[in-house]
Amino acid sequence: MTLKLIIFYLLALTALNVECKTAYKICVPAQYMKQCEDMLEVPTKSKALLECIPARDRMECLSFVQQRQADFVPVDPEDMYVASKIPNQDFVVFQEYRTDEEPDAEFRYEAVIVVHKDLNINSLDQLKGLKSCHTGVNRNVGYKTAQYHPRRMNCGRIPHSSRKSQYSQLCALCEHPDKCDYPDNFSGYEGALRCLAHNGGEVAFTKVIFVRKFFGLPVGTSPATQSTENPDEFAYLCVDGSKVPIRDKPCSWAARPWQGLIGHNDVLAKLTPLREKIKQLAVAEKIHHVADNIAIKPADYLSKANYTEVIERGHGPPEPIVRLCVTSNVAVAKCRAMSVFAFSRDIRPKLDCVQEPTEDDCLKSQYNLHPVFHEVYGDTKIPNYAVAVVKKDASFNKLDDLRGRRSCHNSFATFSGLQAPLYLLINKQLIKSDQTSFLVLAFRVLTKPKTIPEVRMSQN
Ligand SMILES: *[C@@H]1O[C@H](CO)[C@@H](O)[C@H](O)[C@H]1NC(C)=O
Ligand SMILES: *[C@@H]1O[C@H](CO)[C@@H](O)[C@H](O)[C@H]1NC(C)=O
Figure (tube, helix red, strand yellow):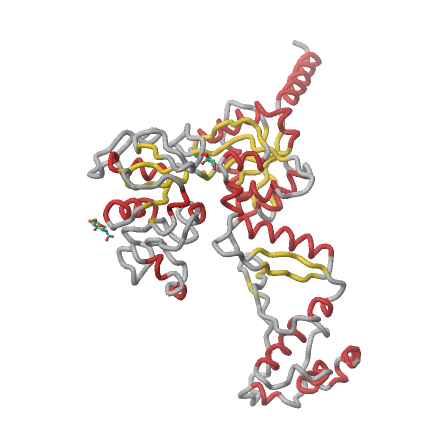
C-alpha cells in the first residue's frame, strides 16, 4: 500500500469514529470531579463519550443542564422537586438508580399503614386518637407521610432533647420513653412494627420492604426467611379505608422515588447510546442497578409517587413564613433558589423573599431582630466572624475599657466594621439603641469620628 493510501484510510477511519462517538456532559459537584473522571476511565463496550463538568453543587448542575453547559446530572427526588420549580426548564428524568435488592420495584420504598387485622376501622379519619407507631419524628415515611393525626404517637425519635416535653406523648410507646431516641426497639422502620405487634400499638407507619422482612416474606431478589411474627394477624390499611392482607400486594399512599438522572430535553434525541453507556459503567463500577424509565418531566415523575405532596405537606399546624429582605436582584435570585432548596429538604418554616431598595428600608419596621441563620464560606465552612484585635500587651479586661479609645475599622457600614460591633455594644448595654443618632454615638465609643469620614452621613 502506498503511503498516500494509508493516510487516506487513517483519515477515513478517524472521520468514521468521530461520527459514531456521541459526546455527553455529565455535571457533578466539584468535590466529586476525581471520582467522576476515574469512573470514565473504566473501559466499556459503548464508545459514547462522556465528559465530567464540575459545578458548585447539584443546584448549579441543574442550571448548567438547563443552559446546555452540561447534558445531565444525577439527583435525589428532592432535587427533582427543585428542578420542577425552575422557570422555563425542559428537564426530563430518563434513568433510575435502583437497588440490587429490588431492581424491579417501581419505587425506592412505599409508605404503608399496618394495623391489626380485626381493628374496627373503615376510613382514615378513624385513625384519630389511635395509638400509633412511627419510625421517628421528621422521618419521611414514619412521620411526614403519616400525619393524619399526630396526637397519640408512639415512639418517634425526637431530634433535640429539649423538644421531648413538647412531644412527650410521642415517646409513650418507646422502649425507653424517657430517652425517646435511637436506638430504640420500638422506633425505626422495623421498630414501628414491633411496637404494633408487641407494645400496644394499634397502627404502624412504615415501608413495605420492612413489613415483608418483619414477617419473613420474600423481598425482591431475597427469599423468604424464618420469622416468629404472624402476617395473618395484620393487614395493610388503604387510603380508601379498606384492608389488604399482608401477604398480598400492599396498598401504599405515598412512595419515595428512586434517585435518577435528569437531563435537558435535547438528550432525548440521542438517548439510547447514553443509556447504554451509563448501564455499562454502572455494571463495571458496581453502582446500583440502573433502569431506563420512560423519559418524564420531574414533576410528573414525583406525582406518580405522590411525593410532591410528601415534600409540601407541613408538620401539623400552619407554619409561619420567614421573610428574608434583600436589596439586589442577584440576592433575590439567590434567596429564591435557597428557599426552594431548603423547602425540598424539609427545612421549615418556609422562606420567602422580599426586595427593598436599601438595607435601611429592610430594617425600617423591624428593629427587634433575631439571627435566623448565617452564611459560612469555603471548604472549611468558616462562618463570617467579626473579631476585635488588640495589641498583645494592651490592658483591656472588658469591653467597657475600650470606651474613648481610638479604634480602626474597615469601611463604614460593613458587617465586621460597624454592624457587628454595634450589635455587640448595644447587646452588652454599653450603648443604647434608641438614641436617634446612635450610629454616631456608637462611633464616639468606638473611635475618633474623624477617622471615619462617612460617619457624618448618618447624622440626619
Ligand atoms: C429488643 O427487644 C428484643 C426482644 O423483644 C430483645 O431481644 C433485644 O435485646 C432488644 N434490643 C435492644 C437494643 O434493646
Ligand atoms: C397516591 O395516592 C393515591 C390516593 O390518595 C393512592 O391510591 C396511591 O396508591 C398513591 N400512590 C402511591 C405510589 O403510593
